[in-house]
Amino acid sequence: MEVAVTGAGGHMGREVLAAATDREEMDVVLAVNRTAVGPVEGVDIEDESDLPRLLDERDPDVLVDFTVPDPSTRYVEACADAGVAAVVGTTGFSDSQRDVIADAAESVPVLRAANFARGVAALRRAIREAVAAVPDYDAELTETHHNRKRDAPSGTALTILDDIDDARGDADRVHGREGEQPREDGEIGVHARRAGDVTGEHELLLAGNHEVLTLTHRAESRGVFAEGALDAADWLVGRPAGEYDFEDAL
Ligand SMILES: NC(=O)C1=CN([C@@H]2O[C@H](COP(=O)(O)OP(=O)(O)OC[C@H]3O[C@@H](n4cnc5c(N)ncnc54)[C@H](OP(=O)(O)O)[C@@H]3O)[C@@H](O)[C@H]2O)C=CC1
Ligand SMILES: O=C(O)C1=N[C@H](C(=O)O)C[C@H](O)C1
Image (tube, rainbow, N blue to C red):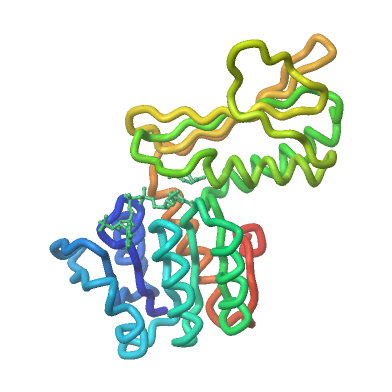
């Protein structure tokens, strides 16, 4: 399978290149970045502004993107024009950017997920079950990430909040608390911590009836996300156009 990688000089782009060049069945035919960087894992990194032309020239089977929302949206549109499947790990999209991606997915398969760790897929299943079992317990969600992270709450946290809403109805989300702010029934507290080089941690606390239940996932390496994204790419190639989630690929 021939793969293209965007954001190839970023933390995740480098992980994806390392994982892809390790896989015998994968061939990285294109890697781009905004800022000029030297070769990564032996792969030359080209200018991201040339992506549409380069996609036509190299004709990869799939593009894997971990960047920021503006270029990511643009890259998915370029994939739709070139007939290339896209795996998107970028987080922090606006509603209108998600709409653009949905339009592109009418032409090519697009798999977008806020978290490519298999453990997070398991966490989401456990959370759906837990909140359904104790629907009246107070819920507080805390995520912790490195100090470079731009978006808050994390994409994973937003996905978990949507899972909780699906299980027990829409709740008010209270982002941190300050001053006189007693807890309202049914609200979900959301807490985003940024410190050091924490790879990514998500914890849901459920409390009521004199007991506390916590469900936690901690990523200990970015390689976990890269491997999941490549597994998703492998699954996606050859699928019909449409929008897919990581759970579809598991
Ligand atoms: N779904 C998942 O499992 C995971 C998702 N993520 C998400 O992936 C994304 C990237 O994370 P990470 O690798 O840590 O971030 P980095 O900051 O390390 O890398 C960001 C990349 O995006 C590029 N970029 C930034 N701004 C622009 C722009 N305006 N135009 C073109 N390219 C740009 C950077 O290029 P340059 O070198 O020029 O700055 C760099 O290559 C984030 O949204 C993060 O939340 C992260 C981990 C797991
Ligand atoms: O920016 C990161 O690093 C991560 N972002 C994703 C998110 O926003 O959920 C996934 C992971 O936790 C790492």
